[in-house]
Length: 276
Ligand code: BV8
Image (cartoon, rainbow, N blue to C red):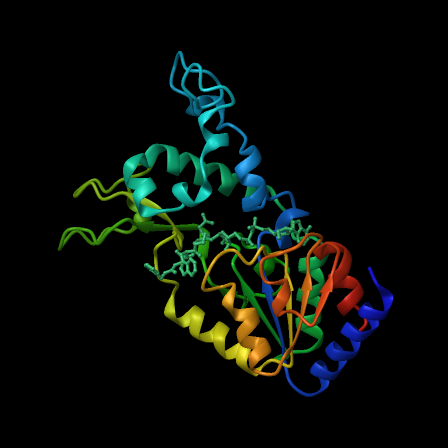
C-alpha cells in the first residue's frame, strides 16, 4: 500500500479520534479472511449442501442430472435471498442459510475485526461500525453496538404473522427444512433483510446519523453494489467527512472516496488503527 496515502489516512484518523467521530462501513470482504465467502465469491463457488440434505438417488451436488456443475453454483444469491425465492422453494433456501449459518459458527473474527474491537475499547464513543454483514464477527470482536443494516443470519423469525391466538415463538416450531408452526403451518425464516425488503428503520436512521456526523468514514470490503447501504459513503462525503476505501479490488463507489487503500481488511485495519 502507498505509504504516503497511509500516513495521510492515519493523520485524518488521529484528528477524528481527537475531535469527532469515525464511522466504518463494512461488507462481505470484511469477513472474507475469516473464511466466509463474499457474495461475489458465492456466485462462483457455493459448496453443495451436506450429503444428508440430498434426496436419495440424486447427485451430491444439489443439481438435477445433466445440470453440469450443480444448481447452486448457477443461482444468483439475490434470488435465494428474497421472499419470492423462499416461497418458490423453501427447502433450498433454508438449506442455503443452514450451510451459511454453519460457516458463521465455525468462523473466527480476523485481525481486521479485532483491530476495530480494540480501537472501540481504547476510544469509547468515537467509533460507529455499520455493517451489511449478517454474521456476528464484529460483535464477537467487541463491537457489540455495531449497526446491522441487513439483520442477523443466526436469528429465526416467522415468515408472516402467526394466526391470531397462535403466538408461538419460532424456537417452538416443528423441526424441518424449514421448521414450521405446529398450529398454523407458518414457516420459519432467517432474521435477515431480503432483497426488496425495507431495512430496519432504527438501523438505517442510526447509520445515516453516523455518516452525517463522522469526520472520517472507512469503507471496508464492500463492492458498493447494494442500496441503500452503498449510499452511506456519499452521504458522509457530502456531510464533510474524509472518506477512505479499504479494498483489494475496484468497487462501484471508489469515486466517493478521497483515498483508495488497496489491500485487505485484516492487513490494513491493524496498520491504520492499532497504535492510535
Ligand atoms: C430496499 C442479507 C426498499 C441477506 C442482503 C437503488 C439502486 C439500485 C437498486 C436498488 C436501489 N434501491 C434498492 C434497490 C434494490 C436492492 C439492491 O440494492 N439491488 C442491487 C443488487 C442492485 N436493494 C434492496 O432490495 C434493499 N431493500 O431497497 O428496500 C425497497 C423495498 C421495496 C422496493 C424497492 C425498495 C435490501 C438490500 C439488502 C439485501 N440483503 N443481505 C443475506 O445475506 O442472505 S445484501 C448482501 O449483499 C450483503 O448484506 C451485502 O449488502 C451485499 C453484498 O455486497 P458486499 O457486502 O459488498 O459483498 P460483495 O461480495 O458484493 O463484495 C465484496 C467486496 O469485498 C468486493 O469489492 C471485494 O473486492 C472485497 N474484498 C474481498 N476480499 C476482501 C475484500 N475487501 C477487503 N478485504 C478482503 N479480504
